[in-house]
Image (cartoon, rainbow over all chains, first blue to last red; front, side, top):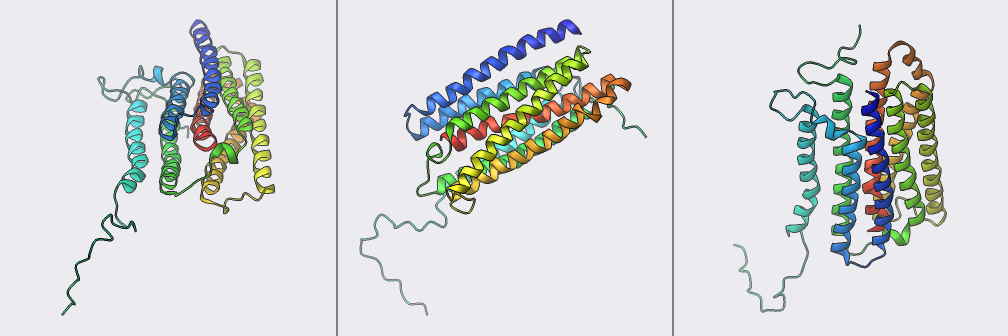
Length: 124
Length: 196
């Protein structure tokens, strides 16, 4: 037990150091002008790296893979529920993008607005 | 009546109910914050123009708070490791440090909010500030909740160590999982609101 914990503590220290370095990196890259799109991607990649370090080691998610799953060949309840959550999370994040991509409700002028228009026949 | 499977693992799930419960709760929290991140993306994409976070907010203060919160996550995990090594004094030391760091985070956040209010930046000033105050405010509420729970475990809650070590250790593991989640949310909030 104690040796196992000592092993964990050594990992915690390394993860803490990595998180510190990545935090500095987050701020440092924000001063580099990558352009908006690449800037967002770089910032989110660093954040995702930090997040997965916290999840894997501080929250012991890597060890949870070993816990006995519902069916012996399954992936375990924690990982399983997190995968479902991640799917819902992706959907919720992409909802605005889908809303942004469609043109319903936009008041944009059509490109051929100056072209002669066809008179709509009066309704009978 | 005792709640079952808080010390022993349930044979079918392979988990204690404590651990499964906290993970399901955190999954619901992902959806809560996910909806707000989604709103942020929508508002940002739809905005004809928007302020740059680093020009409105104080990046050094935000960076400092990021370091403080990650530090508190580190002390939390050491508090849990201390209990696993049968070291209650070590637990109290690290849990105390976690609470102090959480309070430092809140004080810095308080300074930031006060500064925003002084220069006339309120949640109703513009959409960017609205989502900033909503997301950081909800996150701050989570910090306050965590401090209350952690303070309980440092104080009266630690009496359980004398009667049931495993149950107390499991409780600290659950509190730790919640605390790391709060840290995790901030890891994404900081670049999204302050830097992008």
